[in-house]
Image (cartoon, rainbow, N blue to C red; front, side):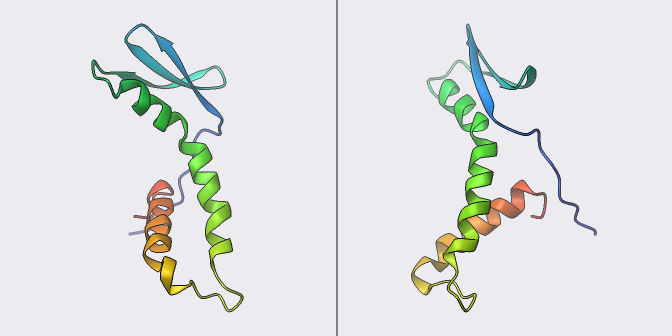
Length: 94
């Protein structure tokens, strides 16, 4: 099976609250509607809208966590592996 890096709509993404609907936009393009009658609906929409910034932060942070020899310090290895797995999932390389 070949894995292909998938691209996403560039950020920033924003949330527009319209009654019970939380709409996620990139520029003028609507990407998603979160329509939940739960307390978490707005938080879920904001988390979705933060996705491009979170991906960019991981891409900048992960290379800086290695030492000059290219090794990851043992004390942060589990978190480093978890962050790499999240980034791989975002890129369609699960």
